[in-house]
Length: 611
Image (cartoon, rainbow, N blue to C red):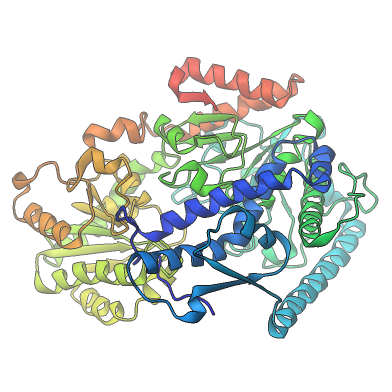
């Protein structure tokens, strides 16, 4: 029986929400189990086949993903005992699958106070697994058939954009609109030949790719390719796939697995090798030397990096940019940044990348990627602010929420309290206005008690909820406000502060170990909603009562040492220097080292750090 829980409501002995403890415990356990795997010849053969140390990162991430629910239940049980809450007889015994990596759990983590029961999957679960395996096989078969058809029908679609020059591949996730979050903020100022840029579609969870987006890409002059048929609205577009008789970069495993653990290693190893062969073929087909990814959390992203690194070839590199405020310790978010080069907002980010669990080679501080839009947003947000002022709002707060639920640091209860506190204030005070920029539509949709209050607030004309949330920048709301408030350690607050706005973190997760509590407790971060509301009401009445409230001025250099609108330009220069290095025949390490030294000379020794 599953334990009832709400990680955002359950506090540890330090006062922080249980989610932080669960994340750290799952990462620690994954590291310990992966060390045990190294004793198996089958595991060692996988490492030998690739010649890459990053195999360990792949397995660590895969292990954590599978054991996380068990670790969560253990921590919930500990929490109940610590808080003198009785658990039922069923809750005292944790049932875990008697297969695969779960068989290690009894050896590495649990004491005698925890009872584990290894059980076989129920008939229902077996049928469910069989159904999804059959569905996956059917999809793969259809995709394979379509790939064969495309190979025969659209031969020109699989020719590289530049046969003699190295290419940057860009994963399409955020889009192309530079007034929003975009995948190519670095492209226009880089001076890189458009023929050397290839946008690829492989992320079905991003918004659907239609012909309008394809036409925008063509207008930029860059090339594009689709890697998954379901990503495009027009499913008749050609989909790239490896050559039908291509040479495998990594050969299959030849050790026959014995026992459940080895079967798990074999299955995960096969998945890894297949992914490596796929991305190796993709890189070779288009002469790709840099793969700019936006994702990174799934184990498969490690394979994209290993494909550049086979047997020490160092034939290219994986790169990403910082998308949000880094506040989790590196070991807690094990494997979330499996890249060689990481473009960060500031040197402060490095403390969250150490110890270097992701095997990053270089951290390059470029500033906030979308800083060039700040000036362009002034007129648009002035119109929004004037509209609220015309309705009587003489003090405006921009609100930023986050995802919520039982497995998240932000509970639905806390999110509900957050919204109701501000909306009820608005209904009571005719001089108060709100601009809401939600993370995504489902955040508010899943707060039924908030909906009727929100409707009343909107009806006053002093509450505006920005639509089309996905990809919108926080400054769309914050530049129209007198104060910005975000739930938790809020990236939106940091982004707004970099743009020159006043902002406060409403940290109901009680993440007291975070440095912001040392920077300015109850000035830039609060852990009590009532005290936060009282402080903002005082600021509304008379700012002189607390001039430091929401003021990030003393800390701006730590958030973004540049703030000059040129972050994209810096990213583009670095990428161009890397391309030039590959053109000269240098390997990955030499390319990154030279580009980093050149970057240091131009922007400062602390702006490019080899990790």
